Amino acid sequence: MSFSLGLLCRQCCHSILSPRPALVREFSSTPILALRRTKKIPVLSKKALAAKARKRAAKARKHIYESEKMTLESAIDVIRAVEVAKANATYELVIKTAMSRGSIIPKGRIALHRETKARPEDRILVFAEGRQAEEAKSAGAHIVGGIELADGIISGKHHATTILCSTALIRTITPKLGRVLGPRGLMPSERRGTVTDDFAGYLRRLSGTTEWKGDKNGVIRMPIGKLHFPIEDIVKNVKQFVTAVKRVTGNQKDTEEKGKSKSVKPVNAITRVMLSSTQAPSIQISDI
Image (cartoon, rainbow, N blue to C red; front, side, top):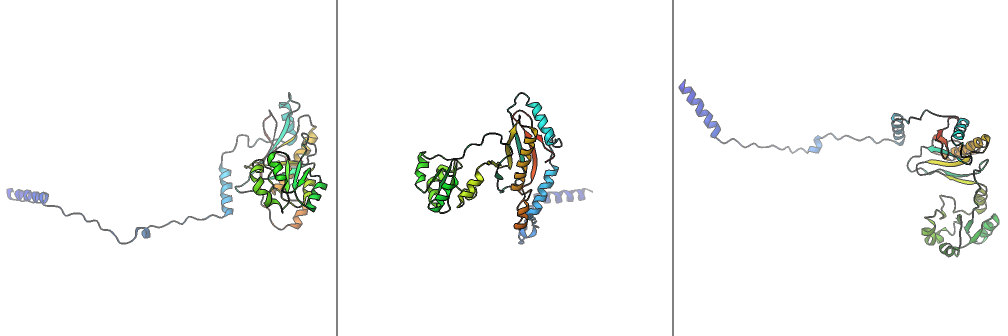
């Protein structure tokens, strides 16, 4: 018993005192990236992205007044009851569109059945030469001339609410007037239609109409009538303006355009139409 105990103690001391072999880490020559399974991220098409956005919008929390809608005539009656102390209050129509990123801001011109306020007189300045200058004068332009008009605009001698330019002169006036007229929103541009050779047609469309334009979020606001207007005039103005917006946004096509153009115009969907006034709440319209 004592012999076996001594042998056991000797083995224990030997195992404690003897140096342990160093741990050797083995590295594999196989690349780590090759062992990993790379996941391919699926690239969604535009159609799939649009469907995903619609699903996300459907799951989003709705506004508490989302389901509360009124007919147009009922909304007019409610606003009249709220604005009873202000007989000269203005009805405002708000149209919200689902404008996607990179889309063109909706805008246009319209002559309402009954105007809300007196239309300000436009003062037209036209950069044109030769026969085009004569056409612009006969069409009703107030100031017509060539590049010599640029100095008068810079010095403040010539004032205008709309400036048109022929395609032949636009490159000549841009270096001089770009920084002056650009911040004012008066610089002629092809996108706005103010760089043209058909001055008579443009001035014909300009006369007797009011310009409307949406903001960068696709919200269009338009004063649509006064509180003392008869209900029939308000209804006609609203329906006329909504029809004009539907045509510009692609929600309604003219019968003439259906047979002519084969290209499909992108639709900027109208999500909400609301009527409001100075003091009254915005009421969503159901029958438009």
